[in-house]
Length: 230
Image 1: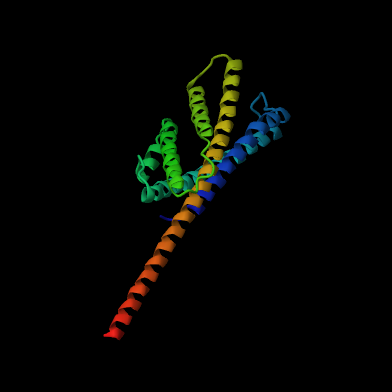
Image 2: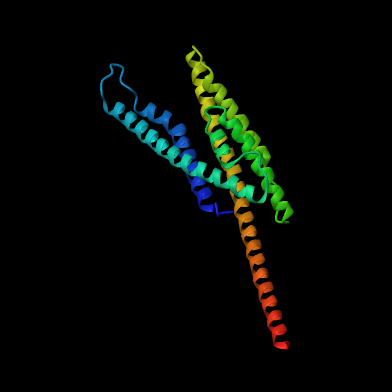
């Protein structure tokens, strides 16, 4: 079992960065488009350049944040499942969990199954050790998969009516923000328990090692005393 704290903290950081970038885009894109309207004759004006610059900054920021998040998150997921398999039995192997999560579109739903299994195994291990204080808020995890399903459904929809299309885009953005927020809540809760379980496991192994050393020294002392008597 290896320490997975830094991987979890990095994944959480980039997850929050994506959330902030999306919030900024969601709340600032409309005001910027209103303040700097586009030109009707396709002429390059200051307003057009400002809108292009804003879109480029947000897009680049989101791109790099997504890459950093995927690297750190998948690394964390692989180690998290591997750690659980040291003290429990999981439905998925570390590599299997990573590959299933990476499947486009359906990866959201497969990851719900994977993450839910991880939560159950983790809580069982903590309960066996008497350190489970707060149960995992599964309502947030269920809410995340439902919002992800709704967002995916909206992405596949198309409307000829401009008003309906605008409402669809707005609804998709809202569900995306809510979904990311719910998963951040679930992830934060899980890695806090993961850190606590690792500390207890490490302490238990340390105590066992100390007991073994003490036992070995007692055996050596008894052997020395026996030789002295002889």
